Image (cartoon, rainbow, N blue to C red; front, side):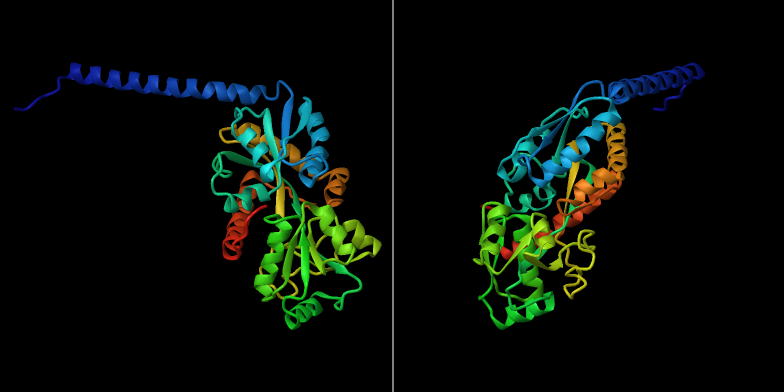
Length: 338
């Protein structure tokens, strides 16, 4: 049996199709309207920056460095809220579960996203799926430091001595699973060294024991800067992609033969997944402007970091590359946190 469509039926069907399409478009616009209106009205109240490390830590320093100028740029108070614990996971989880409206944001050490998940697979959130990377703030340099009384005055001499005396040298770090510890294990693997890791509960005791002569060298993420400048400690090499602006005469480990070595991490600003792109872009633009000011740039460099301006996409790509690199080291060296 064949069915034929009359002109009247065809016209009715066309009208129905057009009406359905119009309704679908209206529904789509209705769904988008609240998010668009929210982004246009933002910010209409104070913004909270949750820092997932304690006051005085480097993430706290960079958060406070951008907090006041960000408040001035946005015309709303910016409140710093420290929620430390569990290698930064407590504060990060609080933000991951917050409304994606631009009013609760996270300032975090990069290690909470690029290192900790490889050591603590059972987490209550996914750092890459539950967050939007908004802006890098500071790329943290890692320094390889030693005392002046050690029998090596340069990185090549250090490597030669360590190879000639396997197991004799020991190094301190801020603790198992911290970025200085992982930097130390990266160096040992790439240089073929056997040295002993001594973990401490924080940077201060790790450096104190180095200064006291209880360990031979240390990896540090910035607290050693004053000791290097005072001459109490000798800087053998830096561990980032580029030379440190604090010590431009000191070469990187990559330059000294460990090709591709990069133990830097980026402290940055993150928002809950689903935050409107307009808000993310506005925050990114304001943070980049702030980092370009000499006063804030100096505050960032004072903790051994470099301003890390760029787009959200560039920040995500950097975090992904760091995560892949550190994940491989953590797995190969069986690194676990305290």
